[in-house]
Image (tube, rainbow, N blue to C red; front, side, top):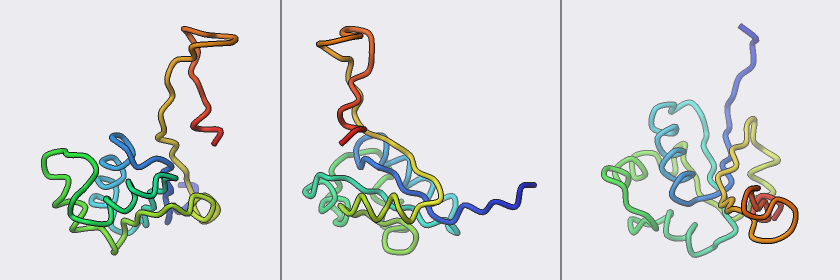
Length: 113
């Protein structure tokens, strides 16, 4: 055992992958604080209501059980990153359409932003 404790996770991206994945981690690991951050204010606002921005069977119940306890949604990306023990990047990485690697490489503009 390394003696490393992960107490706080930050996930950048509150979409179809980040939201449900982090909600599940929050449910299964109640001792870990899970912070989902996104620049999209409307998306974060929706996650903080019962009208979630995406639908997955059972997701609303999981979010309602964890939100405000160990699952948090915010637009403060900088704070989320600074305070995290581990960071997940769950943002769109479409295939590049121009430049070096066009048609093959990932377009990383959303990670860079």
